[in-house]
Length: 253
Image 1 (cartoon, one colour):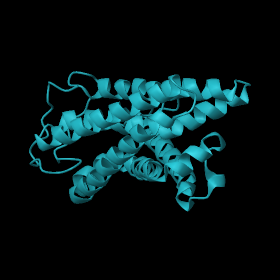
Image 2 (cartoon, rainbow, N blue to C red):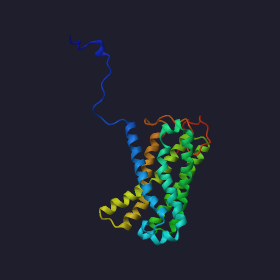
Image 3 (cartoon, rainbow, N blue to C red):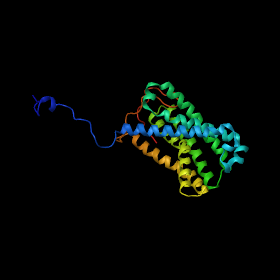
Image 4 (cartoon, rainbow, N blue to C red):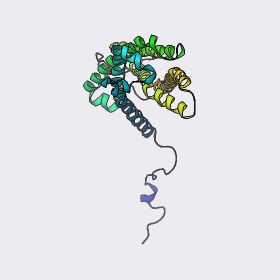
């Protein structure tokens, strides 16, 4: 016998899964994190060829300059590779909450690497290509990276976890210029833009674009935004803050 159409079992059954509509926000975040991590790792491995000190691995237009300034070049590239590859692993909430010691270690190494790449970049600025536009762009990038990374460190030392998280997003957005700048150069060159123009515009445009994305993410983390979740209850980055410092700091930014 067929069950009645209005039987209690059917009436109380939960609705079936949605077949249409956008994917869950968590799925989008996960996909974005995977894309960022994969591209950062790929560019990091590609940049590691500089450690061979083979002149043929250097940018042809900068080969002579790089050979004459190997110390700041290695400081800049070495710090950049480490920060670029490690950076995404600071953000998964599961790692922050379940493995706080690992999270703090990653944060300390990232901090040192980001400061190293900024310092090396500043030393190379006076010798940059296509002056003054491109060197000024890279100089501004290095200064902002120093400011955002130090601000993230100071925030966590003061126990302002939410503010620390915001400054770390900004810091890694600037580090991720190592990816977007290469994509910028490749994309503009592919459509026939001269290398000098692509290089000079990318020296500003790549990191400005990254900061725009970072500020969008920061806005979603601020208290009162519908997408903002509870602040993490475990201190991040360099360590030193108590586990209970996870209240949102309303002075963030």
